[in-house]
Length: 211
Length: 211
Image (cartoon, each protein chain N blue to C red):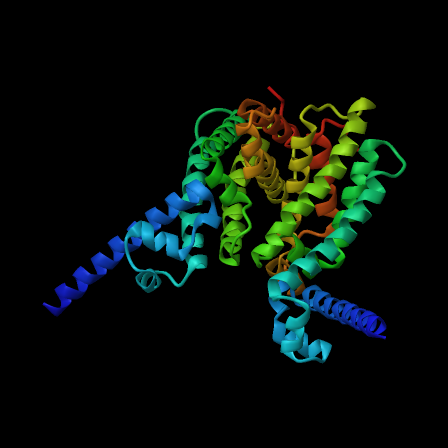
């Protein structure tokens, strides 16, 4: 009985953690990490702020958890394309196109993940996930070099350059300032232009035919 | 007299701020932002921790100040080369070479500036300075396009890609883990290799002749 009661409590705790994380992610998707305060989140979940602290040590831990859950989805989605069918250059282009489009369609979340100033716990996760992206690119670059499509050495370094270029290319167009300007009707880059420029940049950089 | 006394106090405060900042920068250069604690800093300066808070609101403000002072020096040093004599492609290569060498010779500081997880105040400054670097590259790209040496459109986006690529290429080799491995005699990238790979990547990406 004691065992069963504690198992039930564990399940309940697990459910509550999931509910909190879902609410936290909804907040970040809408207003970035800036919108993720413990007070507002407790209100969303419908619990007292004190109860929130029974599940998470604070905003830093929550933000890092939202970050890693959302980033894992992006890494996996990119991996499906980069490891999919087609020539390495075509997969690189398709992967970049999808990555940019996904970011574009969840702009506030994408900006939060890539660049929003936030607790150091998230910065730690950013370093780890950039490494995960880089590893995907290294695989693809190795394949492209073997097939003679890419002309490169120092694949780890080139993969890091790609990760940095992609992130930084999106920071500007996704930033809340740029989005506000676009909403106000200002001329701004559209997704197709950003996507195409990024593809050209990256294909050239790896010494691939530009297609 | 009252005026003079307050002017003297202002000067003294100013001197103390400078002394604190110099000690803070020395700490970051040696051990990164992780080594910048209010207690240790107060000890270095030879004042009470409470007095430190009379001059700076906390670690975040101090870290941001150290960041922006050190980054300003790097932006200016890069600007001298990018706006100097020579063809745009040669200047791009020389600027990258100098940037990588300066980072290499102050590795701990460079890693702290580029990527060390730290207070959001520093993340804010990172966004601003990346913009400053991007503006330098936009100027150079415009010149290179006019002279027919670079083949590009969307210069702002390409400049952002360059900034991201450069930062990310250096994060790995400069990281404390990589430095420890190198110190322990592990095979690791050397400056010449990093520098040359980065130059090749960037020249190709802007559609310039490679050497």
